[in-house]
Length: 131
Image 1: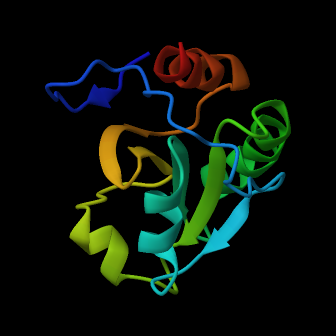
Image 2: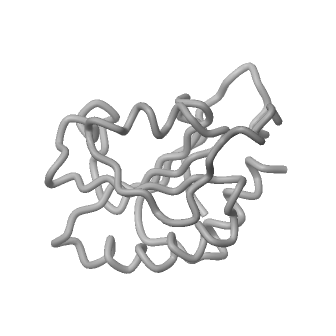
């Protein structure tokens, strides 16, 4: 699986902070330009799917993200940002193709991956950050 991980002085692992006061979604959250920063900064690990309604591969990712949001409830937050309706955020993060997944830890981009991926591939990447 090819993906880009951003180097930091910290380990790839998401550091455990007190997450008991975080209200975790059990579904894929619809994100827009207004709530994007709030969403990515709130969680120790969040995944944002950049997609568009006309993109067939993007539509294939939707049920996979729904399933992952159930599997990782209370540990990972999943969101979707429609790039057709919200063009500023993808430009800011230099999204060049969709579907494009970005992984954040408290607002810091830690990885990104472009293209359709299986649930198994996505679980491997998410588990890497959680363990």
